[in-house]
Image (cartoon, rainbow, N blue to C red; front, side, top):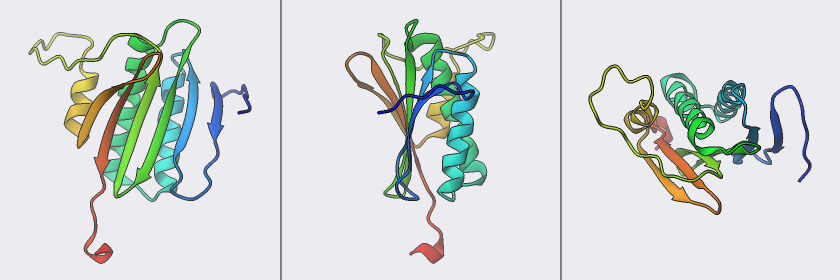
Amino acid sequence: MATERDSRHVNDETPPLTPHAPRERFYRRERRSVPVARAFTAAALADWGIRGERADDITLCVDELATNALLHGVPPGRGFRLHLRHAGGAVRVEVHDSGGGRPVLDLREDGDAESGRGLLLVAALADKWGVGERDPGKVVWCEFVMQRHASDT
């Protein structure tokens, strides 16, 4: 896989082979990677014909998962990989990092907390979410079922 360095703060991307091909990109451990990952997601969703509120929910969850990866999951000198897939009537978002630990929902009612709300947002907006293992690190994922229109049946 070729590695490129450019102003988008990414190292590589798998080119889409078909309109619904999975999209994947690696991001360095930089704060600027989060908005770039969000823009990458918005572009993929637009290519897939996903717009409106559901697209906004997906990009917000990418923002939260990417931020969590940078703050808690990416050791110095490493990065995270964002993988997007649209298949079977759903969009799956995966953020892969090489850090230890396992994210947990913080259900405390502490309205003054300055962090810890990211996974609560993901849990509220996504239809499913979870954490998987990888060596090293983990994959935090979420899925969004796309509504079928009457004309699609």
